Amino acid sequence: MNDTITIQSRKFMTNGLLQLKQMVTDVLQLGKATVPKTEIQEKLAKMYKTTPDVIFGFGLRTHFGGGKTSSFDTSVDYAKKNEPKHRPARHGPYEKKKTSRKQLKEHKNRMNKVRGTAKANVGAGKKK
Amino acid sequence: MEAPRSPEMLESDLTSAVTLLKHLQEQVMAVTAQIQALTKKVQARAYPTEKGLSLLEVKDQLLLMYLMDLTHLILDKASGGSLQGHAAVLRLVEIRTVLEKLRPLDQKLKYQVDKLVKTAATGSLSENDPLRFKPHPCNMMSKLSSEDEEEDEAEEGQSEASGKKSAKGTVKKYVPPRLVPVHYDETEAEREKKRLERAKKRALSSSVIRELKEQYSDAPEEIRDARHPHVTRQSQEDQHRINYEESMMVRLSVSKREKGRRKRASVMSSQLHSLTHFSDISALTGGTPHLDEDQNPVKKRKKIPKKGRKKKGFRRRR
Image 1 (tube, each protein chain N blue to C red):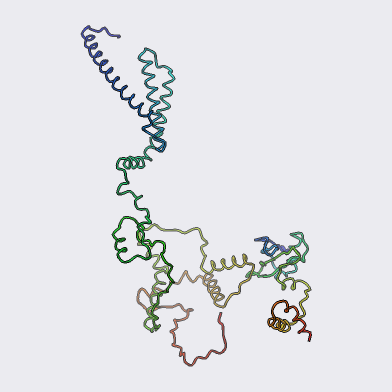
Image 2: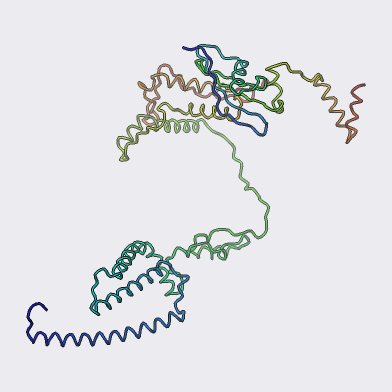
């Protein structure tokens, strides 16, 4: 029994709307635990000859009995445009916005009271 | 003229030959007169054939050519020539074969030709012609019609579309039909009856009854081979779920009920339960429902007092 991990990709599609490539990956790992996402990332990068930081995997599910896992993968080629923020965050350092939720809501409520271009000047109220 | 002939035979032969030739001459003159009249009519365009059936026109032309070749041959033979290797013979043979091949086509078009001839003769479609049953907009009922028009419509009889309503006159506001609300009150007896009906239906489709049916019916025995022998409803639903997940690139969550169903399906199919236990057909036979040792007995529904029940928060049982 060989201990190597085999990766096959299925249902490969270039999603023109989101400008990324998406596929379903099947991982065969006999006698091993579930393969972590980083390893899948590296292997896929080698297969498709890109850098591993443009490949994001999610939705890993191991089939009953072990040995096989299927995962969803997207590969973003254009500056990580349309990827939902939590996926790159899982793979690497990601900076979140520092403004708190409460602040954003108060700002919005102040803006709602004013009409037109004055909305841009409402930020002055925030600094008080 | 091999055998020697007596003069009497020659005499009789001569007279018959002369009379025959005279007849021939008379007939030929009559035929020539007729043909000349026909030719004049055709040249005067009394018989236009552009809008006719092309098959009939082809047959006309072929028959005419046949006649021409035949007369050519007769001419040659009558003037003493031999027919050996005559070009007209080959032409005749060709035309004959084509006509033979046209005969099945003729058969197929027989209905159409007959109909056309009848229409040409009578001037209108016959009574049983299905073309008469196409929808006629003038016969359709308008929305503003009164009762009288509806009765007239019923007397129409022939056209199929006579009941169709035509384009509306004025646009009326849609008023939904008002149904009388009925109080829901399912008594215990009704519930029992429904349960019994359902049990009967389930019993009818059990393996025992099905085998009995197959034994006594005249229909041929069906052996379904194509699908996986253990394909169940649950496995089909699983497949559907997998397809959805992969095409939408999302993972769906599994509710408790779904988990229970899956577990039951897998347990049932993995046991050899179905080999030794028949399903319960007591609904049909009228006996008491018997159960296996490991199955739960049928629970009788308790009437829940609705008054004292308070909803403590929102508990969602998925």
